[in-house]
Length: 57
Image (cartoon, rainbow, N blue to C red; front, side, top):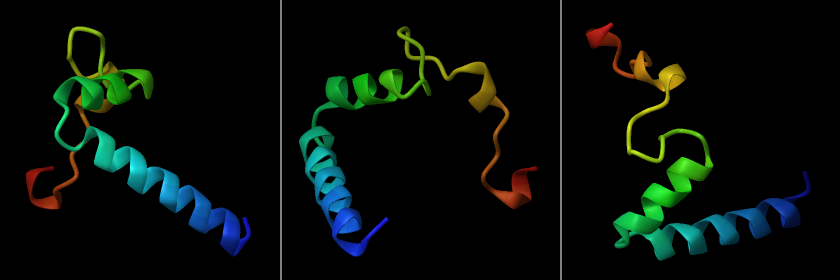
């Protein structure tokens, strides 16, 4: 990936982040489309057991 491609992707992600920042429905929609949450709002099975904090493992 070239530097210009990286900058373009970064701009697009920043724009999307700003769009969904104060819009819970849009944020949930992004997470559902990404396959992280179900339509009901539950975490998908593959994400339920992930622990990101070492002291909780």
